[in-house]
Every structure is written in structure tokens, then in C-alpha cells.
Length: 184
Image (cartoon, rainbow, N blue to C red):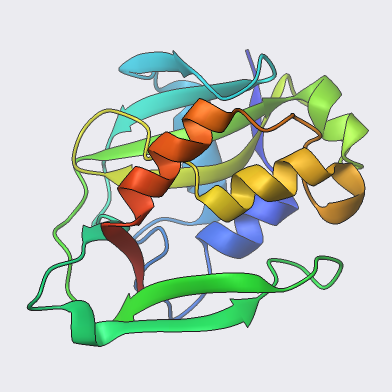
């Protein structure tokens, strides 16, 4: 099985001067590690074309999702943002001014070559990295509700075309109601 880092993931996971991205490794070395090191676990993603490879964190990358508490609620920020120039901006929130713990795991989100082709990304590998979760536990962080909605809107709106799963959406809301990402 071969894995490549998509440009979409590269631009989001390896931003220079951002402490909330993957640290201490180049995109090329990250891709090489994924191909040379077997994951601790392979989890099913939200659709048949999506797999999650769980790796012990070999970097200093910090956990991305942080519980919201009375002590840190004042550090929450929000704005309308788009992930790419082609997407419509959506409301997002994050913490500023936090120092989360180093993640124990990197949970790499992979899409199949066929799905990536449907979304307009040709890859010369079996799987393409579309994202990565930096977590304390070897499990998936629930997809953000807005990402689930975008996916249901279809490829033309930056999604995958997977219909909305109402129960998964409710679980996502329950998690993200009490957690937020951080930016450094």
C-alpha cells in the first residue's frame, strides 16, 4: 500500500510559523514515515473510501482539540473562514493563547485514489493524506459539524458527497460543544 501527501493536506498540516500544525518534520519525511512505518491501528473512517491510520506521535506536535473550561473560555475566538479559495467561508472557532499538551498520537486521515479523483485530485498512490488529527487517545476526534455539512453538500462545495448521518452529526455536536481547536 502506498501513501502520498495531497497538496490540500500539505498546505494545512505544514504551515510555516504555526504551532498548531505538525512540528519537527518536513512534509517529505512525514510521507516517508507513513510508508515505512506500520500504523498501530487502522480504523474505518466516515465512508468506505476513508481510513484512519493511528501512529504514535514521533514529533512535538500538540493536541489540537482542547476542552472548554471556565478558565479558558475567555480565550475563544471566532470568524468566518474558507479552507481554500474555492470554498465558501463558514463560522469557525478556536482558542488563542493556550499551550496544549503534546499529542500521544497522530491519526492520519486517508482517502482512496478513486475518491480523490472524484474530488479532482489525481494521486500516484493507493491512498492520499487529506488530514491528520493530533490526539491524546488512539482514536478519532469527531469530524466538525460544519465539515459534515460541507461533505453532504457535495464535491462542488468542497465536500465528498457523503450524505449527512444525523446520529454522527449529533455526536459531533456533543463533542464540539465542549471542545475547540487552538491556534498558535
